[in-house]
Image 1: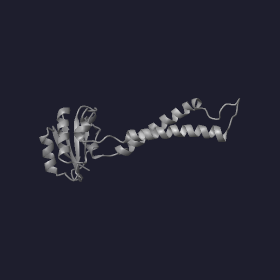
Image 2: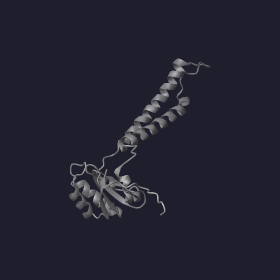
Image 3: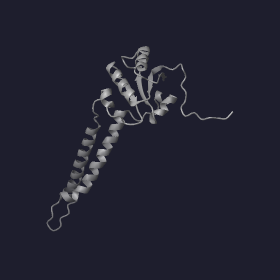
Image 4: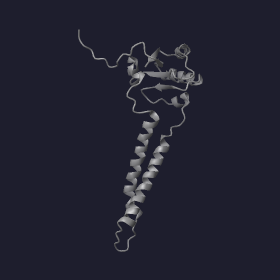
Length: 189
């Protein structure tokens, strides 16, 4: 008997119910299903797709992300820090008077200010992604489902957590099957 590596470990059946996972073939059925899930009042659910889908945010009822504000704040802090750092260094810590030139000149300060603006804006973006996306997530019950490997290839999925106040296993399963799901299975943690 030849050994075959398992890409995804199998979970035992006796685990606690984490939620349900529904698989869809097309974007259109996924969008209709996402609207049904939102209209049913679920709050702890997500959609997993291999590509960005136009209109999915509206179908899910997602508010705009706060990450652009973190990027803007990081950029503003970086610009201010760059200017203040150079001004304080040239005016107080290390004054260098040559031919009556001013202690601080804005054109000379632009490169460092630009670099600090970009650095802190990008760090704000990365920090925002870690905070608002819940990264790093080293284990999730979805990672143990073999069919979920296709979420990064050609399938579309909706997962609904059992911790949701509106969750009832049979009603949720029926709603997902009725919305055109190709397959619906329960997730155990």
